[in-house]
Length: 512
Image (cartoon, rainbow, N blue to C red):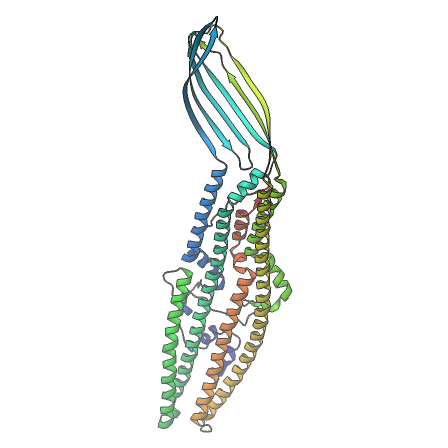
């Protein structure tokens, strides 16, 4: 009995599940593991790396990215080789000294060149080739080169048209990223919930096995050998708790399968799980208990990846609105030049020469089209603004509500711990009194059942506490902070490259 009392004293200073093992109530397989790896922190990396829903969302981003880049490339193509071949005849009729004369000239041109068009309307082209002609005076041919550059001097309409044209693909890519963010959050939170389910079911199983251990020890006591009625009642209690233990064992197996499914892992046993700890100062989720709520809200909003993506999408819509305001006129400049090398053939003049030029074109754009573009951009800005405000309010309200619940639960858990210790002391006293013949078996059984009910309630409250912590992790964006480079990756994907005429450039990397 002194040894049992020492175990009871040790019980209050350990984690909920590890303390049951330390008391010798049960020695499960996971107690033998040297390096358990499944816990709240490692689950984030494992799920992100192996969960198939996250993988599917990542491939969706990849497909949307290629579609977007293909469409954008189509709006700013580079044609590396353009080969043209033409042949024609020019015939001219005229009168000379009262006689109608005909002059015919055959011409053939073969050229090869390139053409590059830029997103903001710039164009550059170059060509080289050979031209030949034949007329009544003989045959001649000459090589030539040429080039042309077109550039907007004061223009935003061309850019506006192209930004608008790619709007659908841009939205598809945006939605793919938002779906990916949501999938990461939901998948990891599901893994965490499954992990808590395993811990809760395992805790219940350990409690029932501890009760079996207590009653079996009582049954094996020499004091019980001649008390047949008392032995029957104790055996009945053992049978009842064994039934509960079998039920909880099935729940453990089921919860473990669900955990492996959400993790994306084929096999893993209980020995791979690191178990929850609440009594230490650094238990998981303690930052939500000890931090100021307003600070938590501001940090969560500032770091929220979904809000960041939506703000960059809103910036793209604001760019469209600016381009629509500036797009009343298109003024395009043009520089061109050609050089004809010396002719070869029957023409004794052997002509050669060059041509250079400068030109401008001015276009007044459709004001109704610009107005519609501006209104479309306004609607998109309001849409993204509403989504941002909704997400901010969702984060704020969720954190306020769940932090309050977590703090209340923490206080209740402390009360349950105190109640558990008190009821354990009562049971210990009644156990000693029963063995000395001063207490009935009914009171002893009732005391042990009361202790079991309190311990069971404590396990349930602990599980509820960690479920709230999981919701707070989702609201505060903790998963993306823990994953580290993913936030930078998304920002880089949805960044606005202002060095290229303030056109938005989406180029997401899909992660490992």
